[in-house]
Image (cartoon, rainbow, N blue to C red; front, side):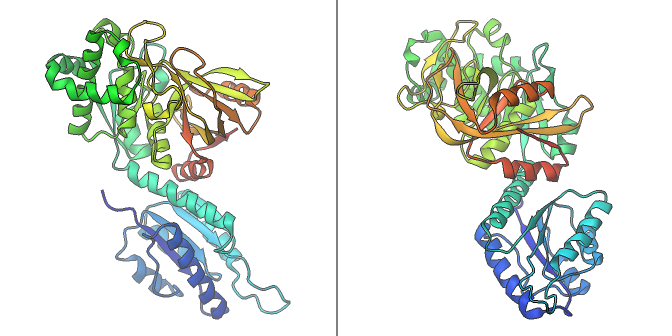
Length: 446
């Protein structure tokens, strides 16, 4: 994949106060490169359409930070839009001095001119930042925009797999390959669950031994699972791992029940748990948009995320509990228990993960939602993952939300969001809001 290339475009005209513009230019370059050393910056201010054209000509940007060093008319933004096709951050500088004398930069009027052109040019999505390069809020918003554009860039190289079909009544997780490519830039590939089951059945015990040993090291109490199920888990883990590697898959959504109980006799839960720790975003119940939500969360946090259902609400503690049958990454388990292995809560067959997740101070709950008309939206809320033991058989995490938990539940149910959500370590709402803006999605932030 081509390396992510963010490009700084500082425009202006020479009739304004060039000393102030030069100072802002130098400080902006420093600020941007401190956020991402890959930033391409021009050797000097771009004070004409010709200089802007010459600067952009050899570049293939994945993000444009367009800044009015001084006022510049709409022709400058038009030139950018004609020559690039990537997210845009529009950055306005504060007027450096207000003393009753000369207007030195007039960056803000330039921003209105540029934004008007952005909206007129196929309503190109963009984000907006106002302030001086050293301001904490400016750096936070620029950083969020850069991370969002980096995720968009990486999505164009993502291959996401549907392993089997969603069960009846779980159609919210289905996706079309053309829609996935058109909207998100990712490639959707498909395989039947039985193909991986058949592949797993063809392995010998010895061929699967390394996968069994790896799971044994990552978990607790696996030896309580019957030997046949342990060996069948290792077969499945090898089948999934090798197929993922052979096909360059970065995220997957797998059918789980009833096939792996009825046709194979062993659940896929712990396989998905191990894959999540291996860096492959792995959702169950064949929820493709759940898997994509997981992948985005893993890109932002650099660590596995929790995938589950909202199952319990406490007004007293202002918490929402997220739970699932047992596919959470082992690394998310509480340190006092470790990644305990048990049985599937309904089918009573193992191995399936059975633990509460560890606490962390900052958490983001996220979901790519799909409206009945086929358009997309983001669910977002933030809070804290509490120090709570396992809440139910399976894996669980308890989130104390910043906003009233009851209102989050009531409003998101009334909004018709899907029942699967992703819990991400860290606070990523600003970055996800920027990503939604670049994709043209509305955000439901609770």
